[in-house]
Amino acid sequence: MTDALGYRKKLAVIAPSTNTIVEPDFHAMAVPGVTSHMSRIYIRDQNLADDKSFLGLLDQIREEIGHAIARVMTCQPDAMVMGMSAETFWDGLEGNRKFVARVKELSGLEVATGAEACERALHLTRAKRIAVVTPYQPIGDENVVRFFSDLGFTVARIKGLKCPTAVAIAHVSEETLRKTLLELDGDDVDALVQVGTNLSMVRLADEAERWLGKPVIAINAATWWLALRQNGIKDKVYGAGSLLRDH
Image (cartoon, rainbow, N blue to C red; front, side):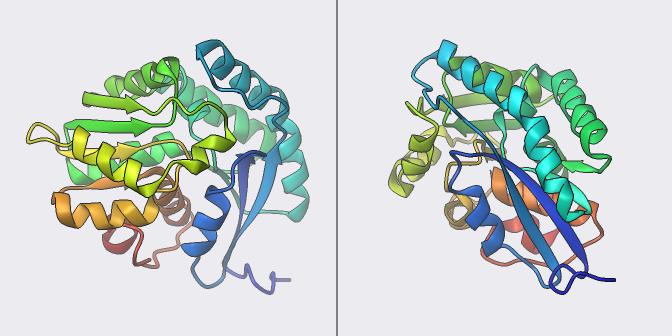
């Protein structure tokens, strides 16, 4: 029998329990017949004040992700979507591939990650030099740079906002992000990328593409785009950037 609402696809979404942005973002970008189903990784300590604390958060994610996957698998989803980004960039390209392999082993399903979504989006735009905004501490930024560098992209500039807690990432204002995009942009940059799924930037990225005149990739839009396209869903979504509108 076919699911009454997810009659095309049911997508399982894994996110930290502290994340309040990715779920409403995915719902706002929904298309008919495709449903998303959240499973949350329990975060006991959300402190991100320094590199050590940031690593501690990743340790919690690694300990808990298997439980989150097991819970969401009970709804019999068709594919997995990672509603978190730091772990998908960690240890560069090799780390991403190992992470995807682990999730596939635990779930038996295809997986869409933010890191791979950004990779594919940048190849589509033929960008070579990029600028990146993150909510991370320096150690997180280093791993983001490593991932893109492994793929042959040049990270001309990166700005980590150093959010003090995981929940505080969602408190970053549109004004702050707008100023950051303008600070990062330049004639030497082909595209701008935002990572960190708890940063709210889908709507702003769509607008920024018009006034900057170049691709601005918001990770939640890119991840949702990849999840749809991997599963044969070609519907266009408007108001969430050029990826979902044009590709």
